[in-house]
Image (cartoon, rainbow, N blue to C red):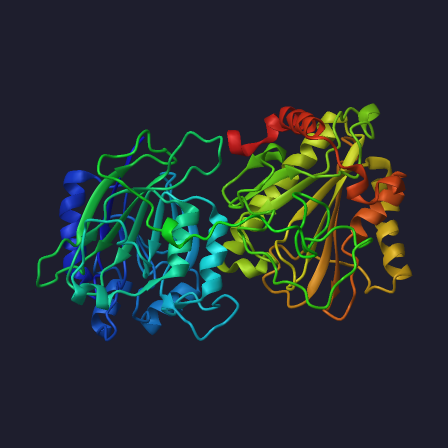
Length: 543
C-alpha cells in the first residue's frame, strides 16, 4: 500500500506556523508522516518558543522526522535527545547518521550536517553536532538500499547531464561533496532530499543507475529534490508531497530521465588480486585474511577495504549471492565458505547440511559498538537470528545438537560478524565445550574467560572474544552461557582460535583450515537450499 509523505524545507525556527499549515494539509490529505530537511531550529532560537515546543503547547500534527542541518541543535533539545526521548509528541530525531524503517515500511537513510574535512579518519561520535566525517558517509553505504536518502549536503555534480540549470549565485551557495555522491550512487535511493541554502527550490530530472548486477533486469531510478526554506520571501517551493510504495522498484524509466550524473566520476578498473587485508567471501577468518598459515605478513600493508571491496558488504558487486540464506533489516545470514562440519558430520543427528553459518551486520564496522545509535537494534536482530537458528538446530536434531556462536570484536578489525556452529548437546552438558575453550586459552597464555552479558558491547572499551554456548535437551530445559575474554591490541590473538577449539572437540582437526575444505558452487548452493528449507519455520524475515 502506498504511503503518502510530505517533505518540508528548513523551518529555521518557524515551526509554529509550519505545523499549523501542516495540520491543515494533513486533515485533508492524511499523510503517513512528514520529513523536515535541513534546520528545524534557527541558530539563535528563542528560549520561550523552545519551552512551548518541549511542553507540547506547540502541537505537531503527525509523525515528523528531522535530522541535523547546518545549525547546532539547542542545548535543551540535545539534553532530551541524549535521554533517548522525543522533543515532543510526534517529533522524532532521526540522528545524524542512521538507517530507519518507518511503521509503513519506508526505509530512510540519513546523514545530517556538513562534511568536516579536518577529521582524516573515524566517525563522528556526537549525534547532535552539525558535522559529519567521510567515514560517516562510508559507513552508511552498508545500508545497501534506501527508499529515501536524506542529507544536508548535496551530492557533487548532481547537475551534470541535467537541463535543470542553477544560477551562478545559487550554485555558489551549495555545499556538495563526493562523499554524498558516492553514498547516493551506492544506495540508489528512490528519492534523495536535501536542503537549499538560499531561497530556491531545485528538482532534477529523474536519473537511472546501472543495474546492481549483470543478471538484474531492474534499473534503479532516483529523484533528487532540494527544498527551499519554509516561509522564504521568494515564495520558492518549501513543501513537497508524494506517494511511495515501500520497496517497490521502478517498472520503467520515466520519460525525460538521464543517466546517473555520478557515472562521470567513476573510474572502472579491474578488481585487484586478493591481499592480506582481503578475504574470500564468507570465510571463517576475521579481518579479511585467512587461516594465518601460509601467509607472510608484510610490513607495508594496504589500507583495509571499504564496503565496495569488503566481502561481507552486500554493496560489493563481487559478493557470492548464492551463499546468502536470509536478509533482515539490519543484518543477514550466510553459509560459511569451507565450513568446519561437512554435510555428513551431523547427518546421524538429523542435520543434512553443515550448519556453519555467519551472522553479519549490514553496517561496515569493526565492532557492534562502532555502529553508534544503530548498535542496539543491530545487536537485537543478530541475536534474533542466533536464537532462531538455535531453535532450528534443536528441533531438526530432536535435541541432539546445541550450538556455539562466537564473535571476535576488535577495533582494528574490518567487518564484525558472528560464527554459528552446531555442537552435540552431550559435549555442552558435560562441560567439555566450556573446558575446551578455557584450556586452550590457558595453553596460549591468553587472558581468562569470564561469564558476562555484554549485549551490544556499547560500554566495552577493550577488544574481546565472546562465546555463546547453548543447548536444549527438552527434558531439563535450556542451558545457556555467555563467556567473554577481554584483551588489548598488544595480544597477538589467533583469529582462528574458535574454529581450532571446536575442530578438536568435534574430531575435525583435518578441517581446521577453510581453504582445504572449500566446496564447489553446486555443493554450496545445495547446502544453502537445505538450510533455507529447515530454517523456514523460524525465519522471521519471511513472516
